[in-house]
Length: 358
Length: 267
Image 1 (cartoon, rainbow over the protein chains, first blue to last red):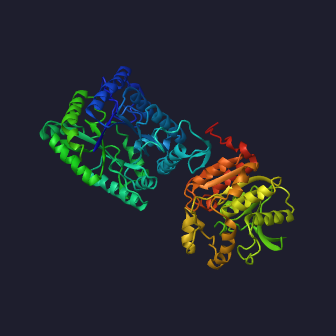
Image 2: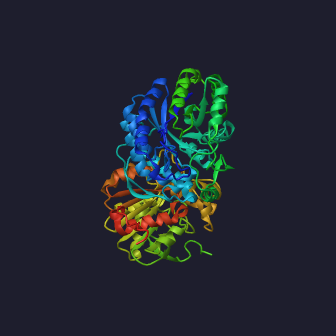
Image 3: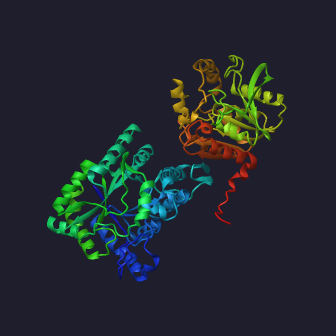
């Protein structure tokens, strides 16, 4: 099993914040922001030292919970400061991007990082369709088309035009091309039938997140079936599972940590908005309808002492088939850094060495 | 209820090299001659859209469709020469030329033989340069449709060719299509100066879209455009996307790379 640390740039708010998303920009504290980014490298140097394989970043907007609206910037910054660890950009929200620009930026970053880039492409969480005025009804189609265009831009040696449904270009011919050939390890992120099929058709990896092993296992099983249909078999490393982990010395301590967690996601949208979004946003797991998580807390699927967590990782390997765990140790958005560092140390010393062979 | 594709086209005939050649015509403006693929002439919604801007002349080449079996034409350059004569006999000295798949190769030979007559060239999923071992679609009409189109459901009322007609044209197609890589043709392509647009559907399962880059390598005036979510039959799978880029290219040639899309939302 490989492990990835999900870096969210921990913002410690000096005073209570409004609870709605979008969080008013005026509530931002510059010093707290500087500290959030400043402490990132020190933490990641430790993560690298502990033997994590990847550090991952993701794209979220208009809130301090995950303070990386432009993940290409944080990924570049991390790549410049750390030497060995792979940088997993999971990932640009494809439907609201210029796919050619994404292809260029990722190729440039892969080259700057000397071939250490891992890429995840995705549709984005439901709330993000509000960020740049993306029509949620078009998000799926724009994602599929954008992903295909990114792959084409990376691999086509001649200048070409793209006569798409949502994107149109007469001239595409990117420089630089990716350092890794034909392109960096790339994953389609999501549990949907469409996402699994896209990944299988294009020989990409598949990334799932947060759901129970059984729920996301349905998606990864479907993904593997589709790969077989296209005549290939994914390696374990081609399945990423992103999850929350609450790790403590004992199971009791871990359960106590869970009880301290809020059971609401911080920064929810107003009900009138989230209800309307729910109706437009058809999400599924391998074809079975699934409501998007728009306000509830994300589940924690690894919880307990090192012994317990090692067993859970073993079960995850069996049920989900994941070869990479992308972990939030201590919930994202928590500015409580001390327990995070303790959990990291415990994970690095008592869990990581025991899950390598799983 | 929209009318069937090609409803506005009228059927006519022209003589050339001893053949009586059927063609369908619609529209006003600069002439756009179309040479069909190995399955024969089939008017698509793409033809209708093109006929709003051009005088579209879509030929049924000798030996295809309802025409008598063609045992006379020995090679693709010979077929190109017959078609050049037919176009001349219609009084068209200069014209835009579009070839689909098999007809893409005919169009290339025609442009090589009469470069001064071809204003611009459009190749829809051309079969002139094919990946090694490329196989033509075969089987039942339904199987052929699934191979040709990413969206066979969009075929609607367009009839697939009669298997008997297919059997009649197969020997001609086999005789004329030439090798997957035709060294003679490819050695001549660098001399072809006509502005050329090569289109491939991203889901083409007959000719891999990667062949597009070979045209671009060989031909100085070549532009390559991928039509997303289209198979081999681009003008059926995505007629609007197909016609938009073809019209723009024929009107502006290489300046078609300059966008005219307006992005002002409110003045």
